Image (cartoon, rainbow, N blue to C red; front, side, top):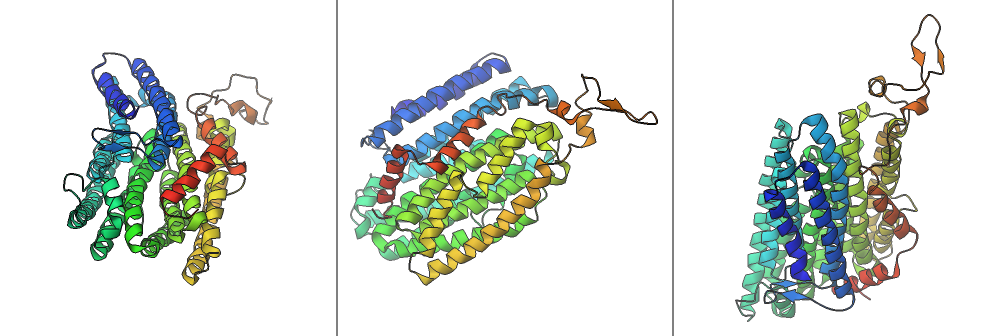
Length: 518
């Protein structure tokens, strides 16, 4: 099952590259492949949930329950993105001249991207995991610049340069862990295996482990979008195609977090949780401090969502830093919730951009009137993102701050209070930005794109133009651009009201693996 999971996106990428077909056929091939991939992902998760730990290639690959959870998340979001892309690429083809060659390149790189992410979360060898994370950088660089504009090319170069510096620091940390494992007596052939590092954790040189974890945190933290290494993220998200933005924010940031968690387990076994916890608290609080004023003063809705990703990665770090049952549980739960919520919003941002031809917040008005499905999903998604009940992000944020405010540590209490204040600022910023976007009348220029086909309600005085009812502009129908996203919304509502027993047990068992308590 493990090798099948990895072979599907790789084979699909090759098929798409060499398949002589139309854009429609490429889309069909990708959706079929994404469905098979989701099926394999669910099957692998079920295996790990049942207690199995599949391995392959002489234990180069290994999947425990932590890996299985991330595999399930990646394949689910990739499947939803694949369905959404049907409508998105057809609009790009019809209105912006995206060619068959461009569509082929898009789907090829998309599957390479998915393959690299799955390899990263199934690798037992932390060196292979590093290679896979670097592979995501190479694939997404070309996807970010897909539209070929000057801004897109500039953003892709900024992304690859900053990410490469970060991943180089992560490589230094990986080498230091390898060195200290060999020094502790492990065989050099297996010293990069995570299982070997874990079994030898208590014998590792503590000073080198401290230094190595700092390199790991800064390196993979860059890929996560943690401040102050976050500067690539708003540019990349604002220029990337909507499906890619959904995968970048919803999945790729979590893949980098996964790599960080693997090393955190090793460091905690040798140093205790206080050292890594305090570092994560500092990075998490700094990410909230940086993102709050930028969200408050933002004028671009895609960059607004990007800075929100910085905020939410910071919240996850706070949960891991607070530690304990509630902090670790809340952080893991927040990973799932943010992935579902942010991927949905970024895909909806693609609908808005295609209709309004602008990413400027002041240019977007009357979403509910002009695009009722997109507008309603956008409104509910924003309410979920800022942590209002009954959406699941409220539950995960509640667990995180419960851990901080009741943990008994003065540091945790101060960080928790400051974090809540910053969340209030971010809440106010999102409400202020999104209220005019969702409500009100659509701009006149947008109404002109919907030529009336029903009689007017009346004619004004002095030969004024006919007055058409506002409901007549409600032309958007439930299509591939919105229907798949109902799954995101449904899962966020369900998990916000009652956590399914299998998921609760999964998170509890992963909390034990991470050392968060029973």
